[in-house]
Length: 260
Image (cartoon, rainbow, N blue to C red; front, side):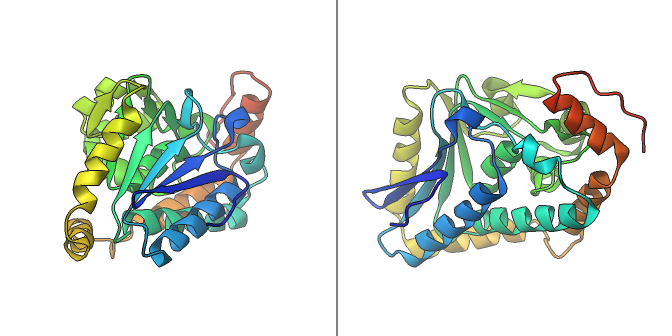
């Protein structure tokens, strides 16, 4: 299989485990990593030996702790729109995969990390996992489908609260909200994930893929939610609040937002 700079791939018993491997950055997503995820998914689609896919993060602290803030600081409205739409496209590859995809969330799943987990068909979390969409603290909004998928999974009111406050929630709260399917100990996370994946890949592959199609069809993607998100993300990238929020984060100080 292809060797990537930021991903580790392991194929065992028909299950491809894709591990986000940027431990020094808490596995934060930069553009290269997102592109590698897209390439790894395409490789999984093309490989008949791959029956199911698991995403996880390296180490015991983070699944993916968000985007690489130093990189997104340079976004403007034009680049921000492309940034959002490209991430949406790659995460849609995961959501629409005819092969089952499970997120094994082993720590922080924030921002793009929460969006990555939500694009998977099923989410299993360890007890130390925490979830959140804290983009508002940077003068931004989720841009990789988070405004749409979080609403689908936990409902409008709670999605509004979590995205407007930027609050993090525990694995147990995520379970209560149905954001995740199961919570396990850290030691049992991959055991539980592989157990569920094993059940799925023992079933008819065509039927499994068609279940994905049918469930996704319930959410009418011909509506304009994802495009509205990309447009709004782009607008945020042209704001003074975005510059203030990202610089404040990097400078480890409280931001002073002005509303423009």
